[in-house]
Image 1 (cartoon, rainbow, N blue to C red):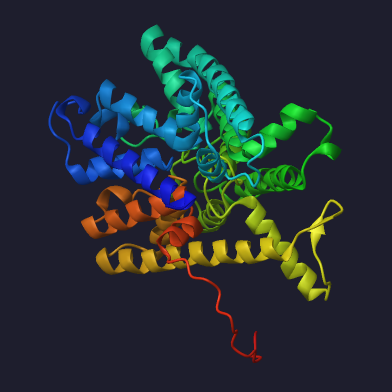
Image 2 (cartoon, rainbow, N blue to C red; image 1 turned 90 degrees about the vertical axis):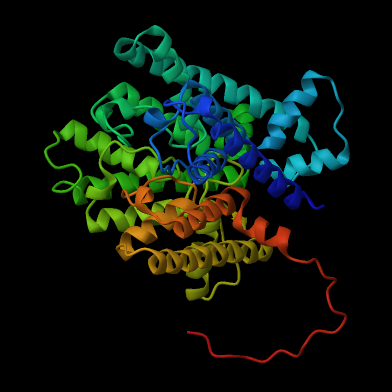
Length: 439
């Protein structure tokens, strides 16, 4: 089996095990067996760190069920090979070349050398960041829910935010309420946003930050691009949402709440899935912007999904360079290779194809607004978890379609296609080239 096939199979097994555990009566708050399709949907959403749900996480699942979801989020966020490496280190088992190759593919780093050290750093940094986030969130939640429940809520939402999962336990305020009760809470908003952003930057960026601190000149080109584009998308999106949502989702808010809601809406669209305002009440312009941000997603080697920021900027730079008749393109004094352009194009086309085909299937199966369906399918394939509210009303065919999209989005649509495709040797003779008209 290839590395991508091993990773695809690993996530599949995690989803099935999680679904079976959630189907136990002990996982349900009512101690009744939850329909298996709902269990499978939830397990896929948790393992693929998406956040789309068909049943409310607080109202339907018991403490045991919530802990199962929490474990799946953590495994899905870091990658099962990273978790496996942690246990290998604990039992002092050496990793062979094969395991290191799979780990490299799982983390999405091009180098095998030093991969074990990088994995150790990922685990350590994750523990520190999630622990800090949990402690800060517990300050607020302990006052609201008591010490024991407040600490558990702090841990759950810290892990969910850092892994860009979007699962929440605030169903006591109302089913599927997410973080809407905290729209004006500065502490909760800032902590959750920081966790989302850090988790979405990627492991390679963390490595540069740990090695070089604020010496940006020494960073890899990858890290420079990720930090630059992430800042533009977050703050640019927030400015646009601030003006477009004044009379829609942010209606009735003071200036402070509008700023927080706009900034949070821009950050969470980068594959986090939380929401502090009703997503269904977004303006038409806000829905389009959110859909675009969801489709772009986070960065490679992170807990986020989407086509990734590097794919987006590679295609954008190539488009501008082609219009200007330049032979090369790049940023920060470095040129991006043609092989990266080919991969970026393949990722974009594959994700767009999945999005369009699945949208047609869902529209054929359910009489739903096209805009909401496209929003939902983008949220699924980009592993975001934001929804306009149609998830609960989807038919069986549509739910299976969303499950498939979430799985492809987490494994990587291009990797999943490659895992299924038969590997063939290149033909010794190539067909002749003939020009066609483009544009």
